[in-house]
Image (cartoon, rainbow, N blue to C red; front, side, top):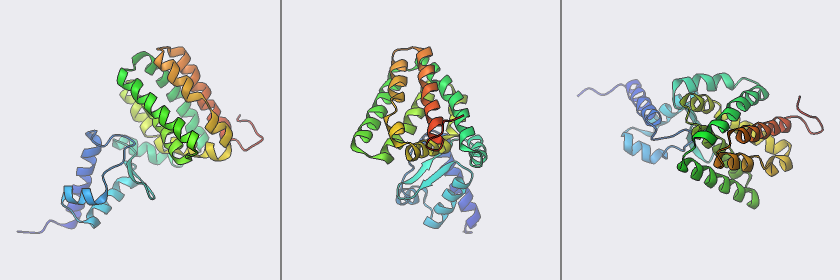
Length: 230
């Protein structure tokens, strides 16, 4: 029996990893299984698996976080293209675009949210609140990003979800930078509470206003201390 060329093994592994992402088994923002599990499941060597993962990191479908693992950053090649483009764009411009997406998403979520959506939003908000109370900045930031993602997904618009998904890396950057530059304003911002209340109450206008105010606060945190965002 002829041995399968190494390049073919890597390509095959890439395809199998992509299928897990596209199928939804590994949702946007989720952590993929650890290396030991994937090596056993895919029946490939660690070297082959690592090269396949790195290929998907390069195109923007996966993202590695030192000490935390590998996460799904995009679910489609479109996400990958946008992610790579956004990596070189000034964060303020990304945030201005994010404002438009999140404001509309909040309004649509107030109209379309399901019971499951509300339960998810409440659970994430509670986790974020607990992290703030306990002084766990990393967990606070992760929950903040997940909250915004949950709002977008509750809007029930697949195009909106895909566009926002491609911006997740930049959204994480904005959350982290906001906390570093203006920690009191960032961690004390009640914006998520107002957004959740409006969505839960089925008030699209209030949800849009709350989302607009919240992202505007982030634009302010990006300005150096003592300066207002323009």
